[in-house]
Structures are given as C-alpha cells and as structure tokens.
Amino acid sequence: MFENEVRNVLEKRMNTNDEDDFTIYKYRDELVELLSKNEEETIKILCELSEEEILYVSEVFEEIAEKLQSCSYINFLWKLERKFPNLNLKRCVEVAENFVDKKC
Image 1: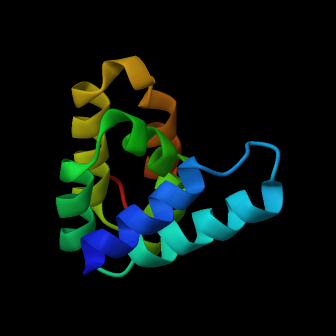
Image 2: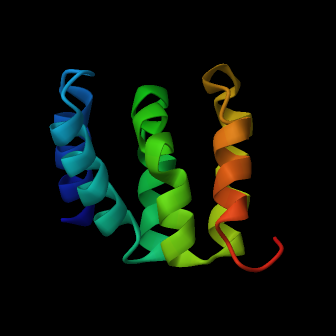
C-alpha cells in the first residue's frame, strides 16, 4: 500500500510539466508527507526506486530529513549518492544533512 502510494505520487510528479510550479509543489508536498511518516518504510521504498525516480525524490531530501531527524536516513542518502553517481546527489545530501539537528 505505502509503496503504491509513493509510486503513484512520484509518477504524477514525473509527468508534470516543469513549468507548472503549483502542481510540482503539490506533489512534492505529498511526497514529503508520505516519506516522513516512517523512516524504515521510507528507506525500504528508496531502495526499490529507479535512478530517475531517485532524481525526483532528491528534490525533497531535505524536507524529509527535517521531519525525520534521523542519522540513519542521512547515512542511507549517502549510500544512494554512491549507488547513483551520475545523479550528482552530493550537494542534495549535504543540504539534507544540515536539516538534521544532530551531527550524523
């Protein structure tokens, strides 16, 4: 169920015109809401996503990090950064890391 919800919102976001800011932010907010509920489920679904899907989720890494306040989540983002070097996620992960109150 959770995976289907995330993939559904992600698919809508991926199919949204890049100039449709209102709709982009709507789907980003939905992704943040879903992916901030349960750290374990979030990491599990992120493991299953494609490179392209991770690119879109990376838009909200920091919002999720702020809500989860989890070093495990940040450590997992670093694993994604190594798994998908072509996405250049380093800066996204660094920014997300800054949203966690404790040092990871």
